[in-house]
Amino acid sequence: MNARTFALIFGILYVAVGLSGFIPGITTPMEAGAPDLAVDAGYGRAFGLFPVNILHNIVHLAIGLWGLASYRRFAAARAYARGLAIFYGLLAVLGLIPLTNTTFGLIPIFGHDVWLHLVSALIAAYFGWAAHDDEPMTSTVGARR
Image (cartoon, rainbow, N blue to C red; front, top):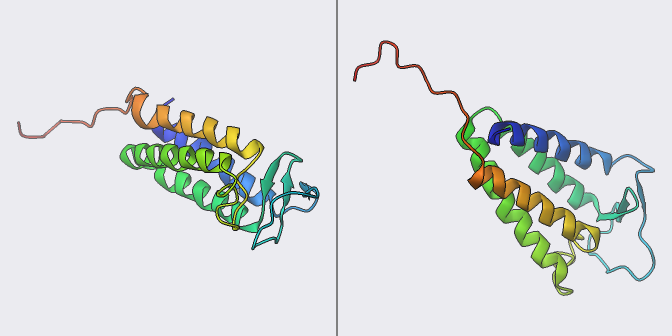
């Protein structure tokens, strides 16, 4: 698998996860004592585990669409993987800090989101920097040397 395949798979996954946040019943109500949010529309736990709200779902949709758009070119897919690694690595760290674990009251990134963001960042980092470039070479037929 290369960066293009990664972008396609993660793009599909994140679009699906973003859309699922808008389906009633997939998100359970947030328990008492959870951090307060300025944007509490759709605030709950996706699949009973991951804290989300409407902004969180929109971010997932945007990341998924970015992945699908970058799938077409290897350079764009590699940039997507690198950007995702940095973004989700940062979110994993912010999710551990009580002052920032709701991205300043807008998007919940605490609890199970921390390990999910870290795993996403590590996978993205692999495809952004370490994965073998197995893109086919362009043809040089008819090209001048």
